Image 1 (cartoon, helix red, strand yellow):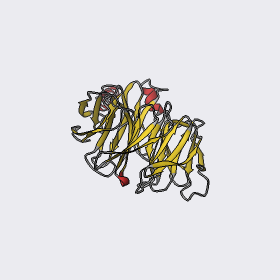
Image 2 (cartoon, helix red, strand yellow):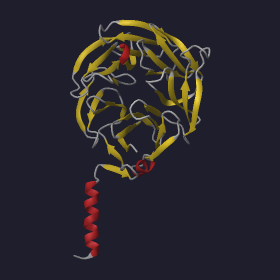
Image 3 (cartoon, rainbow, N blue to C red):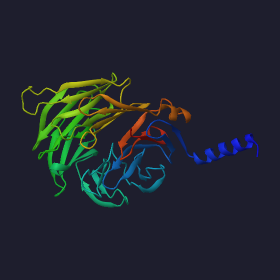
Image 4 (cartoon, rainbow, N blue to C red):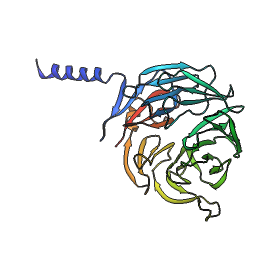
Length: 337
């Protein structure tokens, strides 16, 4: 066999091996872009089951995906559209909470089988959910963002309702581990922290957060990470001792180069914070906010003609970070450094 045919055979073999996904190499392995059956949003990693989940963009179907290939392992049609996010229980296996504002309830599903275990009545239009495990509270953001409800995960009774201002684009994050429920709200007016039984406003600041780029440090009271519209990452610290008269202070800041659209803290397990812009994954030290590593997925998107696509969600798994794209049927898999 001559050299030219041998090279052609090798090239053909490589094409078959890479069929269905694009990749861009870098330290820690390649970035992979998998084509999916439909545009996805709000992916989550269920840590107890080591399962990757995502909603179809219209919120009418839930998928369990193979984290190694992006293939659909299971799916479930939802009779009512899912809300703005879903939340696995970080400590209890077999619990995934999916709000359905049109039905006035939150579904409790098994992340592995996608079977419905319970239907929880939770306000008129539950749109966003977070689990505050140390107080056994399901935090529920009402559609429109005006009110946060606290549902006791043991009795399933609504324990409190807190007015939080509302407005378009508001979202919710669970806060530090404490006996009392604690959470952050983020919206056009800035960032605010609530805690207590029932929760009350403790600290706030008019930070212009980009996308949904806020993540809690669950081990530190009133501490969070935020990405700003100006392209900075901020470490925010509150006033747990009541010495700063309710102010939320910026104690660290780092330039990211472009605004982050999503952030997720792994301060407890890895001492890291992950920030995703439209083209890069930036890994930050959770204490100093120094940049530890950067992974560019822009080249892999350009191979698919997806440059400039907006992100529709991010979740951090054990070995990789997963991103979805608004309006585009693809899943991005980025290796951790």
